[in-house]
Structure formats: structure tokens, C-alpha cells
Amino acid sequence: MTKSQSIVHHNSSVPLPFVISLPHCSSRVPGEIRSTFALSDKQIEESTDVGTKEIFGSIPAKAVVSARWSRLLVDLNRGPDQLNSKGVIALKDYHGRVIYREDCIPDKQETERRLKKYYRPFHDHLRAALDDKDIKGLFDCHSLNGIGPLEAPDAGKKRRDIILSNNGDETGDQNPALGKTTCPAETLYMIREAFRGAGFSVSINNPYAGGFITTHYGGIFSGTGRIAVQMEINQDLYLEPGTMRLETNKLKSVRDNVFRSFKEIARELLSREFRC
Image (cartoon, rainbow, N blue to C red):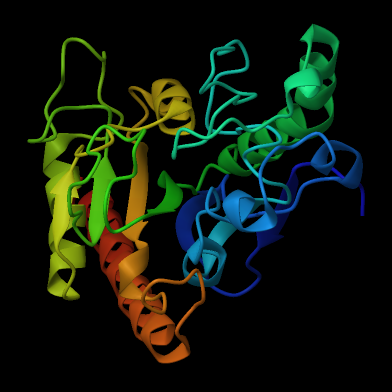
């Protein structure tokens, strides 16, 4: 297996008509780059969407495209030309900590090398998965801390179990400052109700309205009837308190309820298509 930035899993059984993207599921950093970091292993792990691989990666979707390397190496949920401190090659993490030793900040040549080796292969795989004519939507899946960290838009605030994002406002409608939504508000409400029915509390576009993957591929989907939704799940649902360790029984319960929700979403989308 090559050291690209993605692993693609295709379901051979009867799959749900979705592509699942997991751009932040890994904490791994190649050795030659790890030596340039100012962060400890624990601090690197804190930038990982812990639990997403175990929860969303197990959904029997048409395809699951997951990252092999940490977002601190290259952030797959940023545009390739987003070169600020929170861009595709981040200089600070969401706790405001400097990622690199002072003499090791990636230059233009290193940035392009990482884009070529780690960034573009992931997006090539994602585009290929989305070419399947039977795909009804993309779910870009993440996890987040129960309380907003220092550099987050909701710093210090308690978060809901599930955050659904379509690049809109808190009602799911278009926010003129952001552009087009990636999923109709009515469909987003249906998705919200599926998760509520499984016992989750849900917010829409708060604290996040959606990142590059959702907006980019949602733009490509525009007018096709397909949807793109960013989904965040609260890590407090399945981590041992005060740790980054998965609590087995909680994780299983959360995974079962998420799977139940996705089956309901697929059933509803397919029934709508049939009625049309």
C-alpha cells in the first residue's frame, strides 16, 4: 500500500447510497515530519476526530474514504490554495498551539510536495467514489470536543450531540455571506429528525456551517438532486471522561444509533425519489 492520504473501502453487500468522507480520523505523522513538530504525541492526538473511524467507518455505505495521516500534516478539509495559519498546512492547532519548531515551518516547496503526495490522492479517490450514479449524497464526518476549544467559534460553550451543516444559517436556509447551501433545508430537517429519533440532540450550522469538502462537492452536486452534508459528533458521547480513550459500551450504542439514523435517511431519500 502506498503512503497516500486515503484508504477507500467499498461495501460489497447491499450498501446505503452514500459516500462517507473521514478527513480527520488519523493521528499518524510520517517520521521525517514528526521531528519538525513542537507538539507532543498527546497534543497531536487532540487534533484527531477520535471515534469517527469506528462509528462512521463502519456504516455500510457505497464507499468510505478515510485519511491515513493527521490533519496536521495536511488538512484535507481545506482548499488547496488556503495557505493561512489555519489552512491546508496549518501552523496552529485548535487550542492555539504552534505546531512546528521555529526553524521547521513548511516552505512553498514543502507545501506543494505535501499537496501532491497526501492531499490530491485523497480528493481523487473521493471524486471517483462520487462518480457512481447511484450515490444520493456525501456525508463528510467529523467529531468534536464537548466544549468548544480556544480557537473554535464557540469557545467555552457546551455542544449538542450532532451538528449538521449545509453551508447555511441556523435554520438551514441560505446565508448570503456564505453562498449556496449544499443540501435543501427541508432535507436537512429530515436528517435532523432521523438523528433526534435515535435519541441525539442536534443543531444546524452551529458552531460550524461546513468546510471545504462539503462546499466544494456540494457545489458540484448543485442541480443534480444529490446532497452534501457535514456532520460532527460530540466526543463526550463515547469517550471515557477526561481522556481520549473510547468507552466500548458507549461507542457501540452510539454506533448502533448512528447506523439506525443513516438507514432512515436512506429510506426517506429513496422513497422521495420513487414518489417523483
